[in-house]
Length: 276
Length: 269
Image 1 (cartoon, chains in turn yellow, cyan):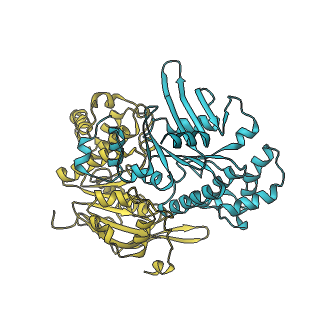
Image 2: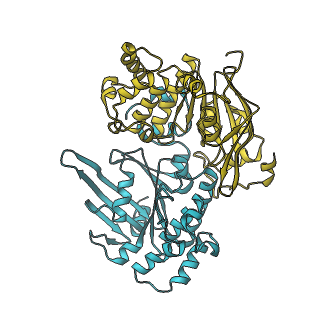
Image 3: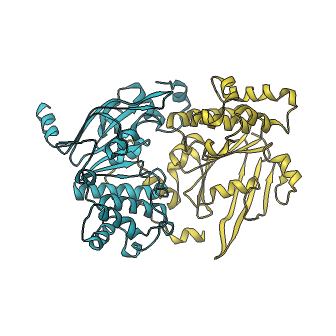
């Protein structure tokens, strides 16, 4: 564990101008992240993806925050040149579906080498790319290196994506539903790879998900978001001791494998959560 | 046990025997379904579970009549299902698709979406039946003249369910009906489906990759892999972890969350 936090987010707000007025989609979100696995969970529209995008300066909305800092340096008002130093190099992001985030008309190996281009000398790029494919447990890296994205299965494509995001040895990886499109066994294998990488490379991981059961077993801490606000922050393995009615409600309405019930409880949304 | 089995056959809603589907692309020949057999009683809810490529959706597509090239036998409600179906047979089997955003016509109102199947089948009383069916899926009359983009994901899936119900089917095919929905909305849709099945004595086949959803909605399930059923189990077996086949057991372990120890044991079974 490093002494100073890798990422500091203090009262982050994101607003969008829309024809019908201002949409305030992230409201006073605060958290810090060390070299650990932090989950942000919530339903659609909770602001979890927008929060992640803001960290990478990828939102088109208006960002305001008391502090948004990576490794002690503010991420607010960076110039494009400064962003290039950070984005894709020190902070990278894995999206949900490899089908849409890999370039369909470029071989996987070329994409990996392109990702490495700004940090690694040309002569070493190929070796580096191969090394990354091995790091994500691809059995036949030579084949995958030469393959087109459409020739890969979902799990393989997602591993290739993760390899690409790791090629520059980032300090922070943001994964936005990285395994939602994968089959359950493949999902866990991909998570095991992420877990190893966080441990061996001393990375921070922000894991965005809607799956409470999964994050409670995979992550260290959980941030529960609803309607742009943080409802609760918990140790992941203590999710069952959640205090907030929203978290409890979500847990209750999730079907259980061991204890199916006659009628599932449904979530009653309390307007007072919006003024918290 | 034997008497039970006989009773089951007499009351069976669907019997599928040795169902085989081959996709021939010229270069490759893929055996998508390889001798799949199962029987489902009237009023039963049956789950089909498996990973991508296991053939679970192909079973539904054959039953729905969307895939016409198959061999084997399908008996629906005592009558063999022919390749060319009459309207009555078509009405008896209806399907609800995974993506409520893609399965409703974006430029048709809810009213038109629900009326269309009635018109196709030459049924009368359209207005009355549309209103009635909306009520059954717990959507108020104010939804009748809305367009899909004015509805939330859960409301759209209710419309998709209403469209399937309006022809008063006997068998409802549910292809991952809640996987695109938030968990709180999923709970509402699962409750609705369970209530509708009881009220109208419907028979369900639910395709899902989520064992917990199957445990919630189904009485029995088949676990599929590469076009074959590897195991048949009932809800009780599933809840108590009494699955036998190594592949089913691996699926069950994987569904329980992240477990470092277990993952290292995973094999391509």
